[in-house]
Length: 111
Length: 119
Image (cartoon, rainbow over all chains, first blue to last red; front, side, top):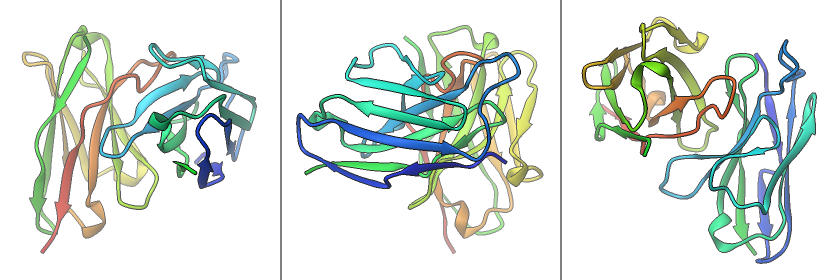
C-alpha cells in the first residue's frame, strides 16, 4: 500500500504570512498514462473535507489563487501565499494513483 | 448544484450492523461513482471503497472487505454503505464523496454521518 507522510503535523502561521505543507509518498504517484494523481483537501472544524487541488497543481472550482500545489514523483507541496482566518483547519494530501490513501493531516492554526 | 445528503447519526452496539445513506442530486447519477471515507477521532481519513451509480460495480479497501457492502438505488439516486460486525474502533464520521475518476476526484462531499459504537 502507498503511504503518504505529511510534514509538519502542526503549523502555526500569522495572518498574512505564507504557509507550506509537504507530502511524501512511499512510491511514485505517476500513473501508467503519465498523470500524477495527488490531491489536497481542507477540512474546517465541523465541516466535511473540501477539494482544493487535484492532479498536483490544478485548483478546483472556487478555490482562491493563494492556494497552489507543486511537486512530482514522490514529493509534493501545498503552499498558501498569504494565510487568512478562514484557512484554519486540517489539510490532507490524497493519492488516487493506486487505490486511495490519505496523509495523516496537518493542522493549521493562526499564531 | 451537486449535493450529497447523508442520513443522521447512529448509535450501535458491538457486533451490530449500520447502514448509512447518501442521497445525490444535481448531476446524472448513473454517470459517476461514489466513494465512502471515514474519519475517526485523532486519525487520518480512511477510504472504505467505491460504487458505480450505473451498474453497481464495487471495489472495497482490503481492510474492510467482508464487512462492508455498498449498494445503490437509481430510482432515488441514493447510495448506501453497510458496515457489519461493528467494533468500538469503527466509531467515526462516515462521508460519501463523488468520484470524478481521472480528473477532480472527491470533488463533492456529503455532510457526514456520525456512527458511534458503544455498549
